[in-house]
Image (tube, rainbow, N blue to C red):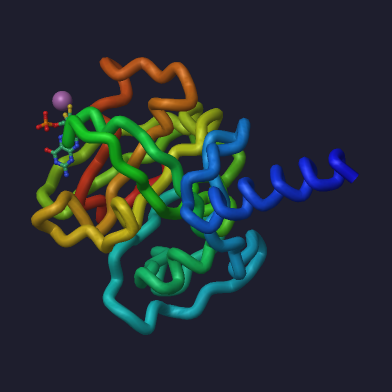
Length: 187
Ligand SMILES: Nc1nc2c(c(=O)[nH]1)N[C@H]1C(S)=C(S)[C@@H](COP(=O)(O)O)O[C@H]1N2
Ligand SMILES: [Mo]
């Protein structure tokens, strides 16, 4: 009886933590916020809303000419996860929510010989992101601390790395935290 009580208590505490969004990240380094409703192999309609992300290059799925364009709603349908991280540029601990790079590239059906992404931002910033980063749950963030990110807050999309859960060299990877992310060319 006492045992049952303790088990019940433990589960209750856990549920409260989950409800408050403070449950620890799993070993994977992230919590699932919303399972994806778009799967690899799905065809995608041309975006109905404002285009916020364009994929080109070595992709097997397109929805406009040779590009795969996403509006925010469709992008987030790939599935939402979150993790808390010390943002090296904001110099602040924040919780990013967004779409993992891995399922995003799987939905785009990138070709097996692809090795890197060239990321381009709204401000013209460009950087190369090698696909070896997929060993970590790198995300295209759509929210910071639960809020949409306007251009004035490095949004609307920003790449985030799980610095707090994995040993990731900041010298190499700090420049890959692309804010105002607009396009990914798969190469
Ligand atoms: N959109 C955009 N993202 C960007 C940059 C930028 O200029 N524009 N600078 C990159 C680089 S080189 C680094 S080191 C970090 C931090 O840039 P900062 O030192 O200018 O804040 O953000 C990266 N992401
Ligand atoms: Mo930099």
